[in-house]
Image 1 (cartoon, rainbow, N blue to C red):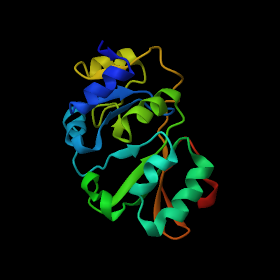
Image 2: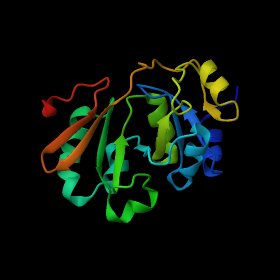
Image 3: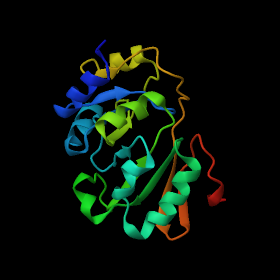
Length: 193
């Protein structure tokens, strides 16, 4: 098993390789935004499926949000983050170089995980996806993940903090005050109902 501490995780990420780390929902595979192609390779993921940008705090992510959506973003973020909610929102014009979607939107999330937040305080935001081979059910144990991704480094210490095993809820911003539910997950978002 390729376990690494925070310091070596940062070195791995800076070298362009991904690492696997726990979140409150599912384990994630993540990379620095400029190396997003690596996630698609390791996961065998369809390039039409966008990645999620995770951060340790709202301030890390707000500059990625288009001005017209910032007020709604901040309103929802202050109520539900950290937590099992992913917001798909128009990306800021100055941040389009990291986009992995075709529609100039970006999924944003702050997991309710001490380990994930500690990592991203050091690394800055990471582009992420669930740590599984695309189309296959992934493991939520470090041992199972190591079998699926034998060459990817995994953040230690283990055992990890509790992981729910359920995906995050995903909401999509249409226009001011108008959100749509994309995927119902762990969290129920009252504003949508």
